[in-house]
Length: 453
Image (cartoon, rainbow, N blue to C red; front, top):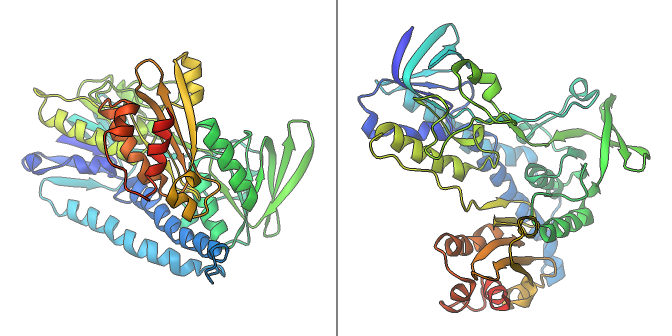
């Protein structure tokens, strides 16, 4: 059995833990997939490169309404795909090559499984360390639909590398992965059908955002809400998806490609963390304290395997906490998960931070909510925007902002100002009147919403 000073399971955000201060540590990295993890290879980075190209197609279709002779006649899918992964794949390969070139780092390109406290079976070897970091991420959840596995399907891990754009794409799910990747293919020319159990897409968002987003997508895609899938079959090259609605009526949807986008589940079970005594919660996430320490001394965890929000910026934050705490145990720091912003890069974009109005009502918080249309600000008016909104929620007693929610262009950028305000405890009055807002830029929507509160 070989011993190390530190074992890191997962080369996504976990890979960033290693710094110059560890040059004299003997370190093992265990990574069964590509270096860079989910974000680099099958998540944030490639999907947003596709999203950006799709955005150009969406805007081109919008041009004639403004008197501009633009149009979108589909896309060269293979060229787009090759541009994306032609940039990403060398980065992943280079990251692994760099780590393998370090004298103090050993890379194991294998599955790992705990076989005891701080002991891992990796390939044909057993390795151990006084310090272990679990950063093994999550994987797509595949619902137990009869016939699904035999029929074949794609997930977010595979669909971005397909050879051809499908004429008809069926998407099971209505969350952020579905909203982004389905719309990408729709923008490039596919006919997209969304199949949802719930009544709205993005059902975790504030209800005003979710309802409006669903209406916008229903206007350009085929959106089936409140349906169950009873079976998936193949009829030649076609997928045949049997649906039943809440009244018991049934129908079928046919497609040339099927994307399952029903969430992701943590990989703790595949690591056998219970063999090490590491506690998990009811949903399979590794339990940590505020210092990212698990229930076992000497074992830390971070990223998607610990946190159901499954956001890269959260994993990066947690990696910094872990890096400090394994290196400077006498000066520990804590993770701050109070105000986690998120964004959905569909078309339109969605961004949020803080509480939804539903959550305020459930918690019995004294609050007031206001929805401001982008079209009420000069730039939104110039864009002839009739869909986009900013929704703010204020605590009527403290005057602090409880939640901020955007739907529309630049949502993921516009929200950052309000993240800053919430984190530093500014009241809505201070945010509204204590600074200039550039005219006629879109942040004036924020100013108007704050003044209404």
